[in-house]
Length: 539
Image (cartoon, rainbow, N blue to C red; front, side, top):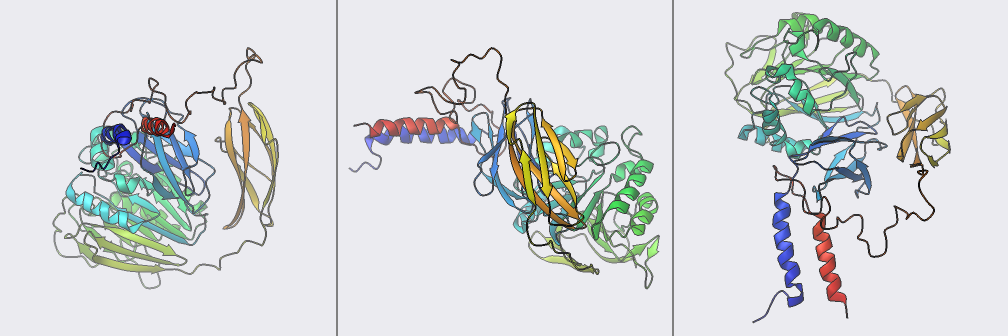
């Protein structure tokens, strides 16, 4: 008979089969998910099943850069810096001798870029089949970001429910689409939403430095997340107060320079569903949103879809008045509920038959939205229009960046000078180690060893120029180091490659225990294959 596998490869084939089955069982406890993605930064968060020091490999196309986690224990959030705006990156996690399959994400565009695509829905965190169908449909849209409208982890927002009803069923979406969330009343059941906040890494630009309410820019859209639970009195004063949130919202909207403003939270100011309108949100926050020209308000809470006419105060906006459309997008997975009574005159459309999500594009002065069912049907669609000033174009030429001290030993002081072609521009600096500065000429001390991407950004209005430089900072040599000490960066003859764990060392045997989904490949597999193939090549 004919043997399909040569004798000399039989041990390799058997070992590959055995180790492949071992690899399929070895996973992270929680697969990677994207947080706080901006034009030049992203946070890759995940949970380990056992303790080790993981790293994230990333890059444009090939994952050829590395960022080692600075966290200990099993919860990790690795911050990637020095990224390019509006650029697709590939990333993978290496942990405990295992590697996740490569995933991709796109950074936010330069602020002011007039093209944004996002998806949004609330009331989905059941872990059930309807949620999974909605998630699968959202993955197909390949949006730039995902806005979650609360009740993201039923029934009580416990640690186990956050894992099983949010991260497990939505892994494929959250691994490639940045996730910005608002708290729902079900998350508030457990310690006023604290477990949920402990699992997310959201912006912290309010005076309390909390993640309960925040804002961020994506392109030419300014997004604001509010904690409506706090606003209706469900939070203790040490966590959040309505008055503090109102004062912050007014300052935030007044300071925004983006032409489009979208606010999202959980309890709807306008709804004819089972829970109805939340009058406290309408009367305390509505006037502020009207004053500063908010274009759209997105909410959940009621398990249906509803879109209001443009509203002002407690009524439909009159002729010549500017009102705000309020949407309830609560068909993300929880049981759809009956709509009591007849449709009120302020309601354009309401639907409690379709699980689905809102898909929104904002291009120049046109916002187009569609409520898409899981079967691909369009349940509702609408368009908002506004006049935008002509977009200023950057002048020809590039900003130049001069560095004095590109290499040094920690603590290392470097000097930087930027020369933008934008006249009267403000230059800001991100030094890649958490430090920042402003001005065309600056200096900075890098306290710890590492490789840092320094980014200079010149801004005039909505026009920006950027330039980057790399600074290498080495570890100071120990006074006890002798001249004969071996170079730690050069392996001894015959020593194994540092990228492949040696049997008997941590990470060589698989490390992480079994968890939900992402299959990882043990590095020891490469070592085994290399050894067997080398044996075959010997004469």
